Image (cartoon, rainbow, N blue to C red; front, side, top):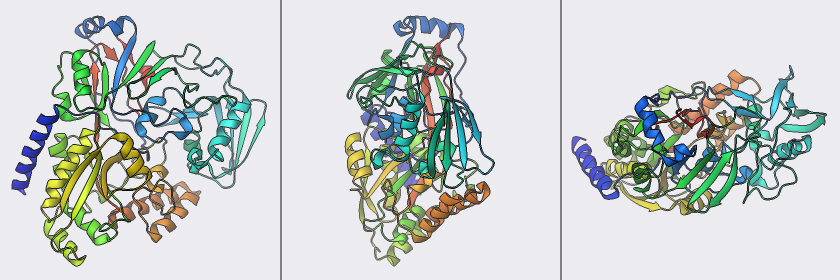
Amino acid sequence: MKKTILALTLVLALLLAGCGGTPSAAPAPSAAPSEAPAESSTEPATETDAAAATTSPRAAANEISIGIAQDFDSLDPDYMTAAGTKEVLFNVFEGLVKPSPAGEIVPAVASEVAKSEDGLSYQFTLRDGVKFHNGEPVEMDDVLYSVERRWKGEDTAAQLSALSVIDSLSADGNVLTITLAEPSNEFLAAVMNAYILPSDYTDQETSPVGTGPYRFVSRSVQDNLVLERFPDYWGTPGRLDKVTFKILESADGLVLGLQSGALDLVAHLSSDQIVQLNKDEFSIAEGSMNLVQALYLNNAEKPFDDVRVRQALCWAIDKQAVIDLAFDGYGIPLGTSMFPSFSKYYDESLTDYYTPDPEKAKALLAEAGYPDGFEMTITVPSNYTPHVNTATVLVELLSEIGVKATVQPVDWGTWLEEVYSNRKFQSTVTGLTSDNMTARKLLERFGSEVGNNFTNYSNEEYDEILAKALGAADDAEQTELYKQLERNLTENAANVYLQDMADLVAVRKGLDGLTFYPLYVLDVSTLGWAA
């Protein structure tokens, strides 16, 4: 093992020297949330910080430039797939309710929410004076249209499965009543993603209109997206006049952008990136990504259709070695599809269900008919260098049991289409996260009949437990069923679970207000230059 660790260290050193840095580590698809926010370690502004801020032309103009590693898959909020898209457009769109940094569900377009004693109906009182970014007032017709669009869906892509429990909608003045067919513990969280949109507007894909603190200005494909403060926002206004998200997919681009002064903030950096930054110019905030990074396996492809092979890979991988070698120790080991900040559902005992045991792994491979190992391909999105680095470490660890793995980097668009949508892959390294505060998103995706089950996991017991969990009205019962689902994924080695990645954010000195959420979002409304 020591020889392997030394070899891995040399491999990563050569890899990082060749790429000159690494881009942001953001997950691809979506999954599920947490309950408590991570602590921000951003340093408070000092006189030196303020002086640094005044030297920036963007500080004088009250604007910032943020570096991101991927382009947007859709600007229509009901068709967003990539977590990186949702992370940014969180600032543009709102539902009747929205998440708070403390992990609570708080009123947004609705000023009040009331739930019936039997849990079968919710009343939402619309907030007075809410306007869309095009200047039009939000009216009940818009709310009915928006909720129904996500409930019934113009097509299946727009539908929210968690809203299928709705039986009917009715309106009385400024009060919307939603009646459910059965009680649901997850309904209110799902309503967060029924974004309120103008009912008579048809250009969401090219010029989106929402109700959030920032409104869309422009987009240049593969280059940037520009937002500006919405002066008629109903809530606390944004501090910055303008925010530009600059798309830089190369390994060097994000660090060079920070170093050159072209960028003011970049999230999801790797440890080798932050050491390249001048500490007099940047503060580094550390939070949690609230995602599940794993070696995701296509369970429908040989040899991964055999549970013994999947289990062998789990016994072969030292999660802490991956974290130490690829992330300098930043990260929290995981053993299933749930992360620690979602503490209500998190089962820590699953973390060490598989401990490194190469001999046990070899025995399982021999039992499955692969005594000499096999060859496999790990397809990774090339713009997420931390995922590439993880795959590189996995190659070396798997070689210890005779498995010859090859890393296949592909561009982000190809990954989304071929791996995530078309399921044409053997294995991949990515991270799955969530856009609401329920465990459902992390676990429902592994149901055999679910459309976004890109790993093709198929387990009859899992499907039965999932059906019970989704129909459970009692919160304690549902929580226990979700934990059973997590154990099922672990015991059957649905994937090789690795870690909840650390979120390292570089913030230019003089810029403050960075706020971590228990979701994969970046709230720019709280950011501003120190006075």
